[in-house]
Image (cartoon, rainbow, N blue to C red; front, side):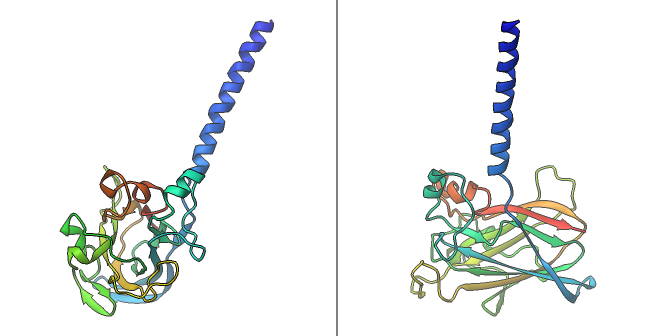
Length: 235
C-alpha cells in the first residue's frame, strides 16, 4: 500500500511540475496588450467611402527610463536586450476589417547599416503604393536610408484573405540632434494608408537586420514583443 501511495504521489508531483512549467511558459510568452486602431469618421478610397481608423507606432533604439520598452522575462534577457530596438507601445496590432487604416510611424533611432534586400526598401500594400515621409510622397527609399521595416504577411499555409504590407522606415542622419537617451529630438515621420478586407490574423516583423547574433537577426528580432508581433483584422 505504501509503495502505491509513493507512486501516486510521485505521479502527482510530476504532473504538477509539468503543469507549472507550462503555465510559467505561457505567462512569459503571452502576447503584449493589444494596440487597436481607432475609427474616426470615413475616407474616400478607390473602393468608395470606407470607415477610417488610425493608430501610431514609435520605434526606439533602446529602452530607457523614459520609454521602458517591452517586458523581459529574466535579468539575463533584460541585459541582452538593454541596447536593442523595439516598437512601442505594443507589437500586438488590431485594425478593423473592410476599412481604410492610417498608421503613423515615428522613428527615433540613428543609422544602423544597410538593408540586405532592396525589395524591403520599397513600399508595398498601401492604398496608392506610396508613403508620406516627412511630408513628401515616396514609393521607396534607398537601401542605405532604411533602418527598420514594418512588414505584415500571412502565416504559412494561412486560409485568411491575402494581405501584405511593407513600410520601410528611414534613418535619422548621423548629425541629427539626439536627447540624453539617444532618441532623435525630431524623429523621422512616416505615414501610410491601406485598405483591409475581411477578418484575418497575420504576423508582422522588421526585415532590417537590427538585432544581434545570427547575422543580426537574433536578439530583439526573435524576441516576442520587440521587433515583430501579431496583426489582426477584426470585424
